[in-house]
Each structure stands twice: as structure tokens, then as C-alpha cells.
Length: 88
Image (cartoon, rainbow, N blue to C red; front, top):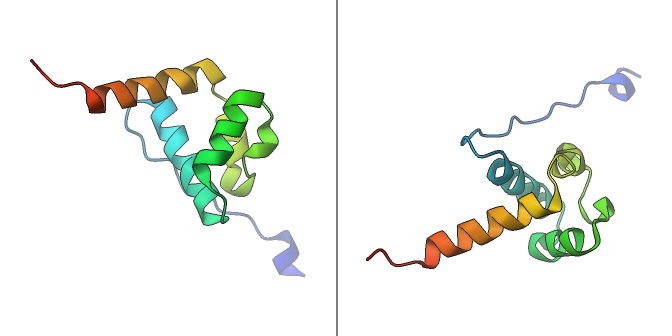
């Protein structure tokens, strides 16, 4: 009976100073841990806005809902451009 009332422990999100990046990486890991293709699931969420594309495992769904979808897109574009822009 004690197992039924045990507390679920959530791992802390590493803090890089960039909330969108931290949440995306955490959600990505949660999706991977549950056997989903994180890219496909995140794209589905961004396009539709339907949070059921994101697992509730480790509170990933609650965390992704803290961000607006445009914030997620901004972070993805920033990451891509920064990684593909050559410094002059």
C-alpha cells in the first residue's frame, strides 16, 4: 500500500540561463526515455499546438506548455543559425 502513495521524484532541469533551451532539452530527453521519436513529436506539437504530442513523463508536457510555440521556434532558429554561420 505504501507504493501507491509514494512521491514521484522529478529530476531537476539543468539551468543554462536560457529557459527555452533548457525545457526543449529536458522534453527531448523525456520523449527519448519513453521510446518516442523526439523530433517528430516536437514538430507535431509546434505545428498543431496539441500538448498530447508530448509525454507527461517527468512533467515534460507541463514544462513545454510554459513556452509559447513562437518562443520554441525562435530558439530552434537561433540554435540552427548560430551553428551554421561562419564568423567573418
